[in-house]
Amino acid sequence: MTIILQITTVVVISVATFMLTRSRGARHQAIRRVLLMMFVIAAASSVFVPEWWTKAANFVGVGRGTDLLLYLLVLVFLTYVATTYRRFRHIEEQNTELARGLALLQARQPRTPGPVAGDDHPTA
Amino acid sequence: MTRTWVVVPTYNEASVVGDVIRDLVAEFTYVVCVDDGSTDGSADVALAAGAHVVTHPVNLGQGASLQTGFDYALLDPDMTEVLCFDADGQHQISDARAMIERLHAEDLAIVTGSRFLDDRTELGALKRLTLRTAARISRITTGKALTDAHNGLRVLRRDVLERVRITQNRMAHASELVDLLAATGMPWKEHPTHIVYTDYSRSKGQSLLNGVNILVELLFK
Image (tube, each protein chain N blue to C red):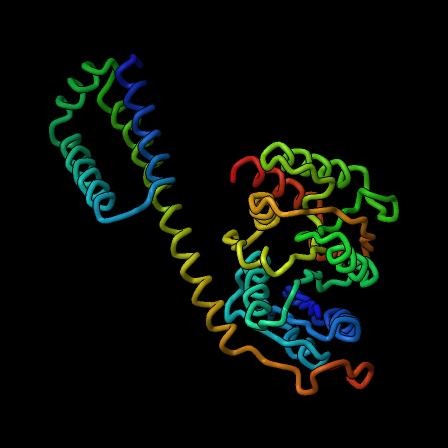
């Protein structure tokens, strides 16, 4: 593995981390979709014209096209994990606010405010 | 005039929460039990024992329960401070009372309990080490010199509650709360508390694996 692939790896991991910490939005979603589309095309082409992959692999200093594909797959997967985690956290926050709002609306108050110690029978 | 609201997060504690709530209501009157989607009737037990009950429609976690309790207490314009109290009966009401008195006497905004300021609390060596390590790490990350960063007994003044919002629903909320409280820069003291580890509270997952979770969350939050 040469310096080109190492740099690529660092860049992709940095972008994944960046997306983890930065605000989401339509632009990020568009970028993600473009990347995913590129990945799909690349994956399909690897079946039909594997020579391209071998050439590309040699260019960046990886032995075989399949190895390059594996490295890329790892990077894409990491990005996927990062963005999914972020989206999951966002949904969790929304869910919490909804549940909390509902809980506060349906709050129940004790029948006799104030202490009435000892008159409750434990429910069996 | 001061008015303390007690927030008791509860999740499936029906066998103990009734007694805890009754004692709290007798002492403080204003008690809200946040039922975190219990399936064992904890909410009804708490209501019968004299608490206000707010029920999460689904289980969200203890951090979320605390925040819901804060929100409920903030609805009362006469509330001056909130006391957080665990539902499993491991805290002492006398400790809580002393902490509230100290908050007013010394004009503090935050008083949190610590197991390590006296030797009343009996802890296993490993658990002690875990908790001390957690406190040291939180000292590094927040700059706040605490002896016990994971004590459920806390007194928070109204102006603190208005500035703090817990977003970590689950395990990480204790560390997050320390961060948030430290960030307010408001006067904060620790108070010696006695935690009684009953067979019941031990069985509720206060295991060492929990300590692993705490450490991991402190490092990767």
